[in-house]
Image (cartoon, rainbow, N blue to C red):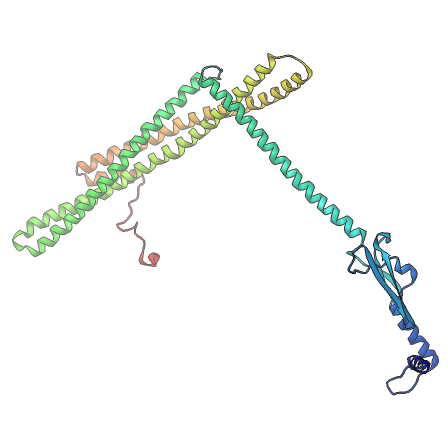
Length: 374
């Protein structure tokens, strides 16, 4: 056994080159030293290297060369500072990033930052819901008090009268719009009937030689009525479109501002009543703080109420001017077109459309082309 060990040691100490010859003794020593240096770590390095193992709290480190091996257990908790590894090629230690206390510190910092951001969003949502709930409660309380005659409300008699006139005007104009649309539908059906009747008369004039003349001039009359009817339909459609814009866009926009004004008035009265109620109570430190907060909210809602009130007054003024201008033009168009049509004055009817810059669509313009239907 001793002989085999000695022969093994001798074999390990005698390197063989590519030609099978033995090298010099100094060259053997340098190769052996390099091999040992590559796989060994000194005692100081053992305190700075962390090797992952089956237990995260303990690290198994093996060091040694050809002569033997030493193994020990080093607790990772005792290792301080960044992890390093030894590179024999450059003869220096290289820090290992992504491990050690620095990584734990950055991970904990990022988790704390995310937690703080989530907590901040939750607090903002809670404050928004709390503010909305308090405002809704105050407004509901004020509305019920006004309905049962127990609470006071701010009233602008002149503005309230103008708002009521606008709502009544809108209801009447909606009725005019509904009747004008009905007239358009009925007249369109009549024009289509006249067109079909004219085609029938023209066909019969070709197939009935004994009544050719009678069917012929009746066909021409129906075609002329159909043409004038289409011209009148263009005028009525323009009238309906203008009334629809006035009622459902211009008036509706003003009424939307009025609704915002009424909501602001309700909030203003709710916070005013709250301030008056607090002012009648005791004047201790807590109550004075609540009075100051209520005074601040009262001032905010007062400014909002006055701003919307000013907006409503301006919009009502502009709406009245626009309504008069639009209706003057549309009523004149409607009168002239209807009169010219039933008087049989084709030239006057066409002149009326030119006067108001109304362009008629050619027959079949509303139908999509065969290419669009594909």
